[in-house]
Image (cartoon, rainbow, N blue to C red):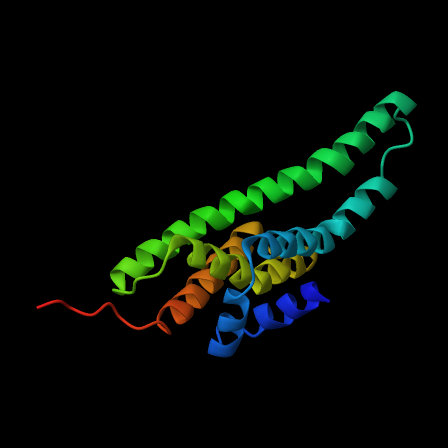
Length: 162
């Protein structure tokens, strides 16, 4: 139930109410949300890969492939998304400085994680629609920058000291 609440609020971003509702969630809930989201998004790839595994592969090779696929592939995806969210949150921190807003990196990390929901879903849909990866990546980054800009400007500017 917590996942669906986070998903619905993530899809409502950059609205103020959804953003503040998601800000109340802990970092462990955010990481858990990302893990479940990525599992759901990459499940079709995992299933297709297991179905179309060559039958000429020996049983030992098949077993090693299954272990690699079931253990290392999800861990790699989670690692890459955590690194990606961290880098994008760093970019959002730079955007905060340019827009003279004072937000913490932790808050920006959570906002970036939740803001990546729709771009990730759209990237998977575009992959199955045979859209080139360059265009898909460009759409992903444009959406992330747009969402982060819209969410950052909701917060007030840092007062100027005289």
